[in-house]
Length: 373
Image 1 (cartoon, rainbow, N blue to C red):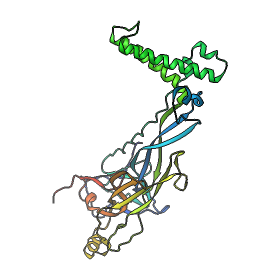
Image 2: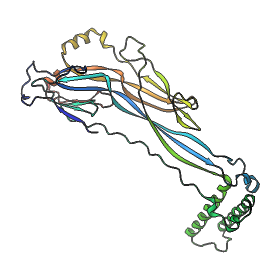
Image 3: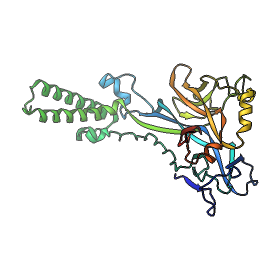
Image 4: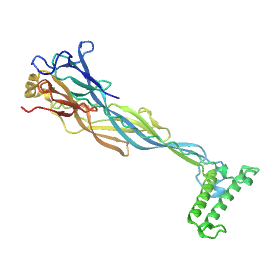
């Protein structure tokens, strides 16, 4: 996704001088009210939740009923079953336009904020500089299950021509024992055809193991596993403000992120067939409530116009089940913080100023080129 770079200065007006009447005017955006200018959004922080799970399908063997009788194997599967296990959870943060934080930069003659970098969906990336959007991280790849082994490929003519399933099972078991005897003889050096070359011996042992595994699967059955990848979007909405002395939520939130079933895999958060997995978001520290600070009010009144940016809140995010914690990380969340105003003096009276914002949070990443007083 490439950014759009928008030239906001009028072609007929230069950038040589900056009279006080020519300023970058930024106002809250109202659809249809902006005649000339560029609309932009500040982002809210979203998560792409990535879940890596293993799916295992067990199928019974053709001779499962004779496993105990001929091979002394107990508890072999008698019917097909599917099981799931959770392997990994990742959170990939990204920025999405926040409809409550939409603004418009009006074009006025001789403005010195000529270049605005936006993403394709209108998130502000930078002013007076070209900024490329963040690259989209790649998701883990799913891994298909391996091809099942066909035990019939290793049956002898005598086994295939047997008159009943019970006889086929007996002859197959005899063949398995013969293979085991041959393998033991090779390992002891007692076989007539024991090779002197170690590599050749390994090849012969591997061949016998392959035959034995395939024939035993007719009794034991097979379990084939694949790696599955799921992803969905999550909006980490803050809790209702509980402390009037701060401008950000002071309480942690805890909600069901998804449910996971050992038989069905990932299910909806309201599907009681799965066990719940919770996401807990805890704000770390507090930010001052600027609206109640008289000094801040007087300062903002003198700032006239400017550029609004986010001041996100650092939060601890934990994903857990009732029995264990699967993920703990710390991230900055835009909607858990507040917005601050950068004075237009930075851009109208100091034309070398370049502003770059974090695409995920809308906070200041770089503010460079300030001239010394």
